[in-house]
Amino acid sequence: MRLFIGLEPPADLRCELAALAIGLPGARWVAADNLHMTLRFLGEVDPAGAEDLDAELRMMRAAPPTVSLQGIGTFGQGRKIHTLWVGAHREPALVHLRDRVEAAAVRAGFAPEGRKFTPHVTLARLKAPDATRLEGFIGAYNDRAFPPFTATEVVLFESHLTRDGAQYEALERYPLA
Ligand code: 3AM
Image (cartoon, rainbow, N blue to C red; front, side, top):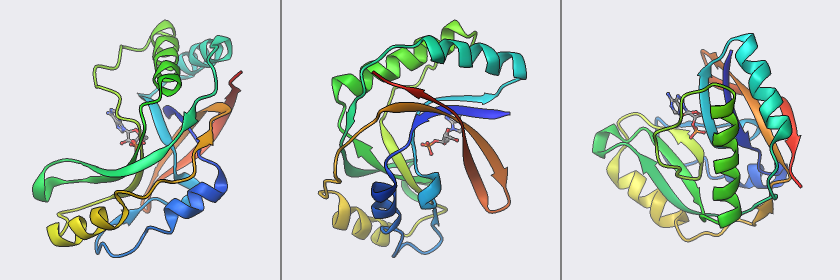
């Protein structure tokens, strides 16, 4: 199964984020139910690997971080921009939690993540986006501060790749205290 570890914003915030889904032709918007912040992508994992990961996540201890979403960002360059997201402040508790999750994944036998952590919630996948429209979207929402939330659990998600895009299923939830 294809797994990743993340945080799930509260339902009202996910609805608020899903309401931004306008004005970018060709964008594939992430549905409210699927909006999340990835802490660690694992990829294809066999049942034994998933069990080891579950055991490590159960033992993990970290304080619940406050997550403040603000600032629109993209991954990719120019016409190759492929991901549109809202960023999060790099609160020490959030970075610490991500480090604890990373350590748990490595203890469970996964290779260390080489990429820098850019805390974000993906809003849409883009294909050859129109630069003017994209600038308009960023200009409209870049300064908007979304209501902060306290993440009280870490979620192990399974990603199901479907013809309509990825659907994410919460397999396990690990409380933070
Ligand atoms: O949470 P977002 O949308 O930022 O892009 C994928 C998605 O990120 C990312 O994992 C999240 C859940 O699918 N992802 C997919 N393949 C990846 C990879 N090979 C990856 N992240 C890192 N390496």
